[in-house]
Length: 235
Image (cartoon, rainbow, N blue to C red; front, side):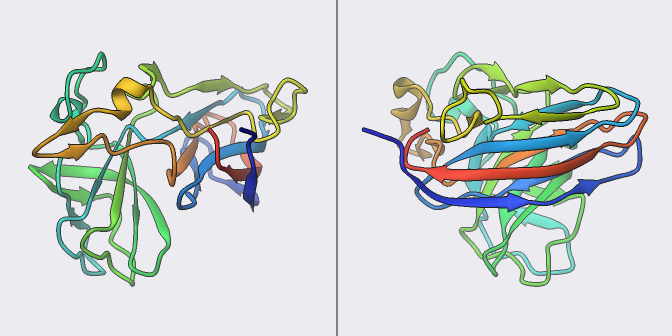
């Protein structure tokens, strides 16, 4: 079976003052795998680290969340992997400073970090947007850049960029596949088949999953100049 590309999306430049993390949210597409086809990053005088963060877990809003406040209540802790069965990756319960992405009622996707956790009430670093959040809205958990993904038992992949140069990643080398250099993870069959009578099936299968590009942006400010994502039927 060949991989078919159904859609693509491009993102323009984004930067921040030196020492402030740069993040680019690459949005998901229902039923499709997300891959990075091309990424350009401009470094100033410091070599930055660019990390590709894929979801570690997923849950849903257990109640609607109104605008102008920062709390979303979730159905279960997305970092308690043992809720679904026994796997090699240790539990990594959601905590302050973890990255998360959630969908607001207008269909848009929002990236933020966790400020604090009180059981399943998650206080975010920023308020819920004007549209609010519907009960049942997806809520993806990414952890921090050094966390291990249970889908492949590997840390988020990180790339060292060249100082005082423009680095081009993913899809640039001839060896990269047509659908992009790195993207969503289709988990091993054993993980994908995990099921709990109380929590349901393992919540991630690589489809309809966002990606976060994270630059440490240390010392000399960098610019994430260009990101192109493609969406296909195969990971």
